[in-house]
Image (cartoon, rainbow, N blue to C red; front, side):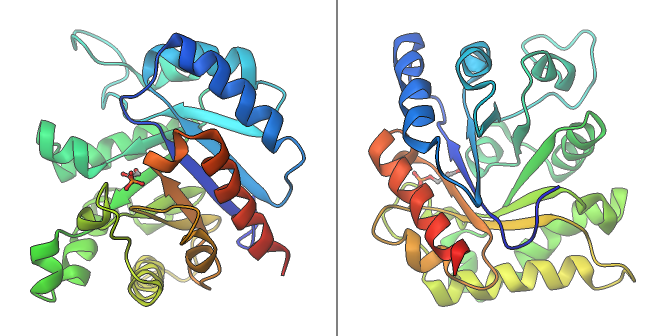
Length: 258
Ligand code: 13P
């Protein structure tokens, strides 16, 4: 069980790398981060490399996982990968609802909610991505958009289903753009998310991490992670470079210790 204060950094490697790349990448990350305390670290990699993650990262302080999962447990679903299969490789984290999947594969809110539940039921930790487009932000409806993304899960499974989970606030306009959200925008939305989830329940959700993703790099990491309502980061491009990823993890430790 993690504490609220402990930051968490997740690398989303997306559809990058190769067997050669991951063989050295996992070793390098493991070696460089072996003495880092007060920060949880996870790497979400393409399915075929989970076995390498297990082989190299087991018995280290780094967890691993995938970027998607099937919404069914097993059966005639050609091309899908089940939560049980992910567990065969000791996966801990599963990203769900990433905007790149929602756009390319028309992932519905209902699908995302069912996947979120299956990941939890199978004892893994979902990383739910929420966030608005630039048009929605400019129209001032970003909170309404994020609220409806959260509602899709709350209405189906209740707010307490967010116990022991991670929500990543990833404004779509900030992903892959070199235009990260400002600290003020990030803090406000992360606070909004926590308040919305806790709004109608008597006992606050336990161990919910709310992290930020979208053009996090070595220059802005410290400022973003120091924010009171931000529990860490979901890192895309910068996670592909070992030294950048290591620096970002170190930035998270430095603010945790304060
Ligand atoms: P970038 O850090 O490359 O902007 O990607 C963010 C992201 O999509 C993480 O899930």
